[in-house]
Image (cartoon, rainbow over all chains, first blue to last red; front, side, top):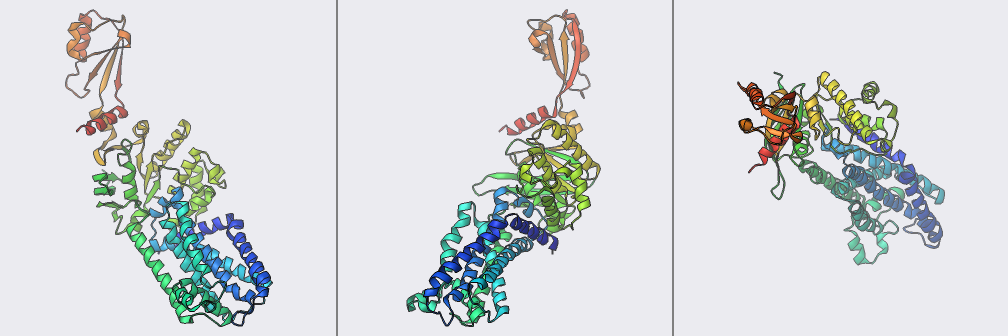
Length: 253
Length: 311
């Protein structure tokens, strides 16, 4: 195992984060703080409690998930797309490092960054709403697993994308709608039965539900289903990445 | 003769659509030598290097580096190889020292700032170690690529057009670096469009065209074998046409009738020079000066490629 290679990629990617701190960390935190002000404080004060939780507090897990999902995908996809775009990918392909090591370096860096953003947003939330965490270990487990899984997904998008437009395509057209319709701002039990059934095909519902359970002890779907859903997405991403590096798809001529 | 540190056997690379980039390439590179890989644009030089280094997947064939198969033992094989690509592929916002440290780490070596300082000083980059790469000149960026390739102390170094876009002074400096690397025991495979560069540095020459290796030969032997010698005879009084008595020599009249050019084979038992000088005297021509000239590697290369292009 070339652990030094993993560390080298990780450090290189984290250095990029620190070079672009305003864009990487401050911007998503500010955006989420605005959500708290608009939905939590301004509009939320006129909405009744949802499942026994004030609306301002209810949306916190969803908002964290929304940001963590999009940031994980954005960080990891850009991390591997940029070397492809500027041609420095040659160095990764000619290094004595396996696909697992290269992926680990990029994904761990992307996940670290989105985890940090998630935790900063959580800390920020305490300034806006009255919040308590019922199952902190589960909360952290869900957060870490989501960061890792969607960083892997972003890594796949970064390899697939052949230009900047494609890099944005899946996050904008698929991921953002799935997150917004995944119960980030509402409980799916508030939907008509038909749309509740449709929502169950959205994997983000399971992530948000499990994460929200770790805060308030209530969930739209069972905890087991949430764990299973995130494990399934994780396994699918790992299988796709293994195939990409074995075949050299979109990497090796 | 040194044993091969790099061996290429029956390497093929074809693309969907039928384009054949490498056609049954076999090549052995000896430890410690400088091999110049020459060929026109699109001949397959970069594809060959990319395939050896693992960037491009071959359609067929086998490559070993230091006895390690580049597929089944890719870690051991790649650890021995450094690559300086043709394009200046560098992260523009990163500092010089960080990008070189990154390369060293990627190849599994622990951080060693003393070693990297020696490399950067050797390449005159030490003063620029904290400069963002985008602020460097083209020549400096090319040196950064070399520093990155050397950061893990490779035994085999591929230099793909190392002096493209580099001014004369920097090019000479780079030649000096390459000679120093050779003196340190590094095996170097060099592709270049500057034939003068190959002539100045290479121990052996390989010529590739249309994905096939046309020849691999010791440079001096090649130049002796294929190099044509010319005898240039400056006449005291220019002439309008060659006298009939000189027809058999295949002379060319040059410089407005003031110079005769005679081509000959230096290794032939009889060069014909003595007979020519006698014939000139008999024809009443007075010789003012004599000069011989060896044809350059460039002329040999062009001849080989044109010959290879014949249907």
